[in-house]
Structure formats: structure tokens, C-alpha cells
Image (tube, rainbow over all chains, first blue to last red; front, side, top):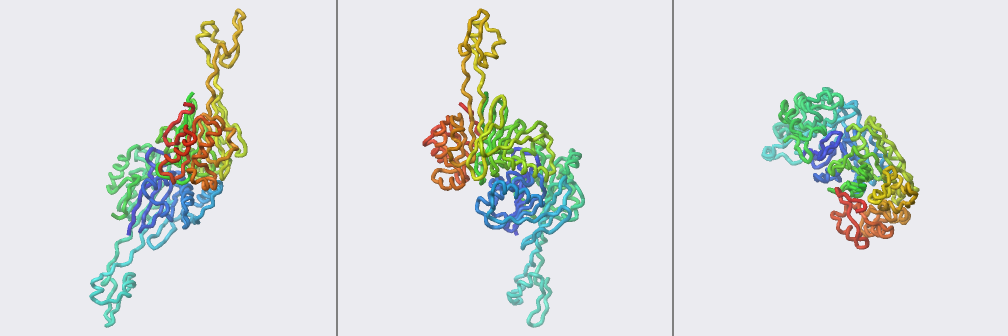
Length: 305
Length: 305
């Protein structure tokens, strides 16, 4: 099953030429999900060929402008481009008020329904479950209320050992129960335990998205063992005081989070505009967590490969 | 006196790759003014080296997102970058509510004052006057209330005929009254009329900004004789029905406005995303008004040259 993330923006609040504020597009089994939607996200989608019309779910972490100011424009463009199918937005409740106010003053009546699911910054909750994934909020520690998002692949069905089933002449109508873990009794009464006819599928993959937050162990247990951990890394560790003051994380701290939570791989982003180039941030994180990559705009990362 | 406009964005509501929504930066005698502020205007300023910190006046024509969605981000960035001096915003009153709501939910207390001057879409009014210019609103005819803006250079002082003044030994303290139009009487009683010692300065230049609007003669008298007329041209004239329905103008109509109002030069913009290239729009306008140019992003037009 495809499970990959494309970076649309990776800057923090103040603008810098050629880095856009935060947004990421997830492709999970050919369904598209958008995480955060900073100003200019529409243009970034056009640049990197992410079809806005394919997105049915948008997750907004918090109400600092660099994480949501592109949303009203996107909602409006989908309307102008003829969207009919619903759009689901998972966000702090105040965002609905902001969107509604702007649509009202532009006298826009959307031709498609927007369904809001309000996040609770106080506790982790499942906010979406479909055939592919379960999505939970991750309460973070930022200047204003903020949640990350944990995307967890559903446990896949067991894989049939085809040659064995054919050798035993097991009828096809038993295949579906076997995939789900049922045992099998042959017409002659022979009993076969499920694990003699099937094998376990690969471990479900997870993508943990943590932005914006200061280093705080409160979310460590929930994100433990992430296949890919995205963690904000606004500053170098020589600016730790500034990171604490603004409730952000340094590259070294992000790597510590990855280490302590047993992440398989770390992706760092949300870079301060003070860093024209990003090598130092990458080097600092890799000094203690070598499996680190930069969330460069336009790059796509396969989760679990 | 410098009087020039730099195009930061020229698309209409739906996004298109490499065209940004409407925004223009005016440089009048080294003071910077911003007209409209579509999503991504901050990035466009960085791209075209327009210093956001130098802008003290922002004019917003109306509350369709493609004309103001970049404003909250810009206001916030100025704050983060340490601005202290006041920012003046000329706009529909509802915009203050939108801005205040978003600043409130992001828990941002600006470190500089924002002073609002609310436009009245029903009548032309002077909304700003300083040593260089007078700015009036232009009531337009759009789906929602909308005003354009007329920037009128102030009448300049008369130019001294230096060699004549020196020949007559006129003391320097008389120069300033002469520039303002005073006559001069020499110590021997000889009387000199002002226009024998000075010449008229060049005619004050005007920049008329008309976006968005349908063709409507109600604003023709006010913009008559513009040195440079910017007029929206969303469609080709073969889509006149669509233009009327959406309260926009075709390229041919924009040229008719320029003709009938005796504009010296026409600048067309606000192009629909359906036009990947713009030659047809330009050709259509030039077919009846040859002095037409395209509002291409990054281009700077001198007003009156």
C-alpha cells in the first residue's frame, strides 16, 4: 500500500525567499490528505503536481498563520473549480469561525459541504478511521493550543500460503475467513491452525507529525516506534534559549525525540528564516540520529522504505 | 518625482502556476504604497525586492480573497520582524474584523499600531493626502462592494528661470515665494509678473487603479485623463456574457474605458486562469487602444514615461 508524504512548505513564521510555510500532502493508498496549509499552499500544489481536487481530508495543527492562512483560498478555489464532494477539516474550533466570517464577507456560498471535526488539544483522540488508516491527534506543547497528528496504517489481512491451500484443495470461499485469522477444518475432519496456512502481513507503518512544539516527554509514549517521525526543528541548539522562549525545538532536541521514541527515521522541518542553508541543522540532528532527512519542498518520502 | 508601479500579482480568483493573485507596489517619491494583497504577496515582495518594511499605506479594494488573503500574513511578519512605526490600512470595515479575529486566535499582540481608514463604496472620497499625493476611492461595480483608487500627484511648484533671476540679482529669499506663484517688485520699483520669472511645472500625473468591476460609465468622469489607467481584463470579449455574469470586464471593454476616458496609457491585468498565455488579451485591447501593456508580475511601469 502506498504511504508517502510530499513536502509543500517547511519554513517557520517569517517568510524567506523560496521556502514556503508549513504544508504536507500525504498519499495513503491513493487517497490524499493535507496536513497544515500555510499561505501559498495552493501555488505549491500546482508546482509539485499535487491535485487539490483529490484531497478529501485536511488537518490543521493550530492557529498560527504559517499553518493555516492558505486554507480559505484553497476552499474558495475548490468551489470555483466546481467541487461537489464533501471536504473534511480537522482543526481547532475557532478556525470554523475564521473561515465562515471570510466566506460570509465575500458572499461565497460553497457548492460543496465542508464538515468540521474539532480537535481537543488536551487529549489524544482518534479523529478519523477508514479502511486504510486510523488518525489520532497528538497533544503538543506550544505557545497556543496545538495538536500533531499520528497516521497509523491499519493492520493488514494475513497473507495466504497459496500453494498449500491449493495442495489441500481448500475451497475459495474459505480464503476470506483465513485472511482474517480463522482456522480451517477439512471435510475429513483434519484441523489446520490458521498460522499453518497463512503468514502475518508486515507490521503497520506509522507517520507521526509533530509541529509546533517544544521538547516535552508528554507525547513520547504515543509516538513511540514511528516508521517516520516528522518533528519541527526551528533552531540550532546554540539557540536553545530562544527555542524554549518561543515553544519550539532545536535540531538536536528533535533528534533526541527520535532516539528516545525509537523512531525508524526522522524528518526535520519548520526552519527559521535565519538559516539560509540547512546543512548545519541536518548535521546537528545526524550527530546523534543518523537516519535524519530535511523536509525540503518538493521532496517525497516513502514511509517505511 | 519618482512615480512607478511594480506588479506583484495579476491573476484572478482561481490559482494558476506562476501567476499570483492581485497586488501592486507603488513607489511615489520613495514612499511605498501597496494596493491589494492577494495570497502569496509576501513571497512576491521577496522575489521582486520590494521591502515590506518600507510600506506605510495599504489599500484593499474589496473582500474577495484574491485581493486580501495575503494581508494577515504580512501584518504578522512585520510584527515578527520588529516593526514599530504605524501601518495605515484603507479598506472595507469588515476587514478589520477579519484581521482582529485571526490575530486574537493566534494570541498575537502587534508591537506596532495599525490604523484603519474605512472606505465607502457608495461615493468617491479623498482618503489620504500628503506632501506628494492625494488618494481618492473610485466606487466600482462588482458582485460585492468594491472601490478602486486614484493616485493624483500634487501640483508641483513652479520652476525658476535661474539665469533670469541671477541676471536681475533677485535675492534667494524670494525664490520660495516665486515657486509658489508670487510676483516680484525690484528695489527700483520695476514690477515682474511671476510668469516672466518662472515656468509652469509639468502637469500632475495620475494613476487610476480599477479592479474588480464590470464596464460601467459611472466611474468614467472621475478617472478621465489618467496618465496610467490600470483596468481589470479578466476575459476575452468572446466571453462577454461570463464577464457580465461575474461582474468583470473583457480586454476589449477595458480598452474602451481607456479610449472614452482619454487615458494616456492602459495596463490590463486580473487575467482568468483559463488563459495560459496572454497575447490574445493584449492584442484585443490594442486593436482599439494601442497604448496598452500587460500587468506582468515583476514588471515596473513608470507613470508618465
